[in-house]
Length: 436
Ligand SMILES: Nc1ncnc2c1ncn2[C@@H]1O[C@H](COP(=O)(O)OP(=O)(O)OP(=O)(O)O)[C@@H](O)[C@H]1O
Ligand SMILES: [Mg+2]
Image 1 (tube, rainbow, N blue to C red):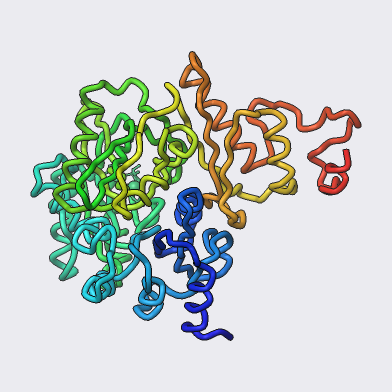
Image 2 (image 1 turned 30 degrees about the horizontal axis):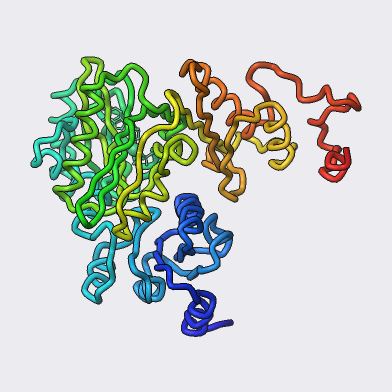
């Protein structure tokens, strides 16, 4: 086994160029796609990954394997890097503060990131800054007091209430949408006295969800992409539509301005997503913040002049930011989610069929195993001039559904090739197909 210092020397030897090293904590798909942008800038993203099999660890030549909760692993990953940044929010704040004390450029800094790590702190700060948020209540501390606070809050809101884990939730894990008193109390009682700290907020009567993505550099430059509409399924983002159809210019500008101003007030560095609810009355409320590349920005990889991943690197390196204009009037991203049961047809075979039918589909696969509802990739469709947003969306969803399930939503046959054999036949090996 190589020691940590051997590994560090090996990394230095592989890095003869003079381009800066950025370290990203976390080896998931966001780091994987940031690495793609790093390559174009003549860099290699250094990744702190939990396992060599992680999506980013598979592709970066500069990997530290270790835990984001281990200060020594964090120190090793930070050594010699110009900046340290994140693909998730899980690094303990005290570790980040320690690294900052040792001179590491943590971007975004711990003073900003704390608000993306803790939903209660975020809600409080947003309301202090005068930003519109759903009504909320803190349920932390003494169990009896928390229960009383929940009952009072629930009565005030007709039990149209959402309970949330203050920390550690993602993709809808740690979010409980309830309709009745007994449901809400059951969630509360199940967590009472445990490690998960809860808050509650009003269930917003919403028309749809939006995301305002921006970037901010240490120099103070800000840039905003068009505001997108996001569609959630089973608590996680399934589709993003850019720009958000029918959103008035005034509302879009307001959302962008809220995100830019907030990023300035908090000292955010890098890209930031502000998730918003558009209420049935047309108001905008801030749901949550992510201070890293975000699912709602994946469309920018093919649909904007500058992708969120390149922009994140530009921002953390304090380069001037790139043009955020969309390349088309309609761009749609659809996530490829693991099917209930992984199809017999291989991913390679599915890709082959997809490309045969939809040459315009831009596919991004994360190198992850298929598990039900797991995000394993996404498809972007950039609309041609004059294409309707509904058509672009239909294509993106059809492509993503195909990649997940090996079934076309419109009944298009999977066979019909010259031999007349079904390509969906699990006995048809890849070699045989390639030999055609
Ligand atoms: N107050 C609310 N009113 C109505 N729906 C809500 C509310 N809060 C959350 N939701 C729904 O639950 C989803 C997940 O909530 P939230 O974004 O807070 O959690 P998360 O798990 O951190 O999300 P992510 O998937 O962005 O990581 C939201 O996108 C929204 O669809
Ligand atoms: Mg969310």
